[in-house]
Image (cartoon, rainbow, N blue to C red; front, side, top):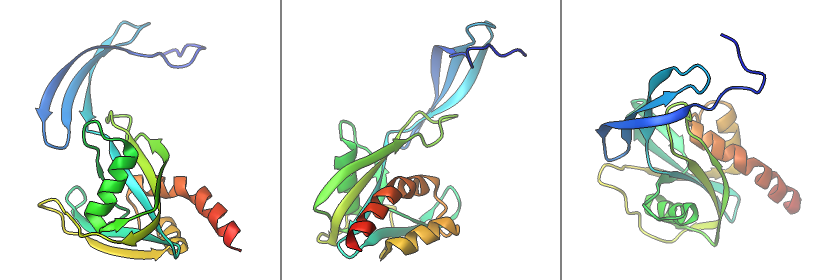
Length: 192
């Protein structure tokens, strides 16, 4: 098969059919046509809502972590707080809400650090990373019915080491820490 000199072609989206609808995502069969070859194919696409992960930094340079059982991998994972966006909710508002609900921590300032595509091959949603500074325990948790979370804080450098040595393996958490790392280096240089 010959590739054009202008790079890969943008396929034309034709139709879609909902295969399944769950509380977390819709599963669709989406039909596309290649513009030059004219071939048509069906591709399966997951359509979950947007997601937010929260890098919550305490005043003493610790990150708020959660440990919970994850059904997809049938194991416990160490993560940063996060959750699904409600319809019409901004990433920053979601991050503030999720941090408070999952951990009881609140902060003094919240900003959007960046946005990533969790798995663009099969997922349509975006995952936003929100940095909340001045985080401190100030509220009761409000977990969903099936949530059981162990909450802890660890020094930022220890969390970064855990990300590098595989102790933290959740890809969206790793993306969030990667986006936070330049900000962390800047904060550390000011404290020297």
